[in-house]
Length: 171
Image (cartoon, rainbow, N blue to C red; front, side):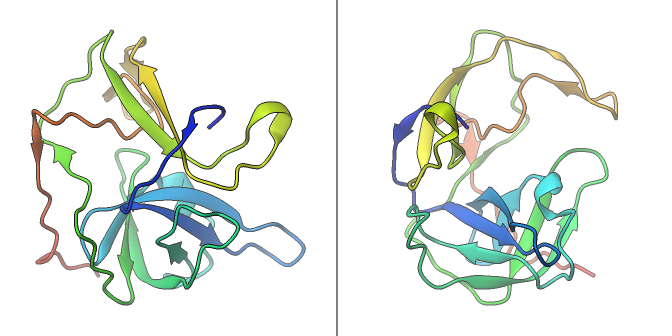
């Protein structure tokens, strides 16, 4: 993410995935759905060496992220660039992100994207950023699903429903 404004969010988390020796770790942004599950992009988890090899930080401060919670395991979607990460320990928050049920993106809609990314001239951002984006494209992904936006968490207050993954199981 480039640009945007500095922001705070209790449910936007930092993910750090170690790489082979001599390589920088992969860093991604995730979204806490409840005390045990985090949603992220599958391309963020594909290089994890083990199911418990992802560190999750509940901090918007990239320089001083605090104590990490490791992943217990993760599940990648076969149909989209999505992954769910199950935490090795619960982390309770006052509120969580909500997913819109059966939402259809249309050109002209606006929403927010969150991330750390880089700023002007590639300068590393030390704090969570948020930028408002407008939907301008509709197409298809490699699975021939209709897509209208990539790598964005869209927030729509009028159509949101809570996500309850507390009874979910993984293999």
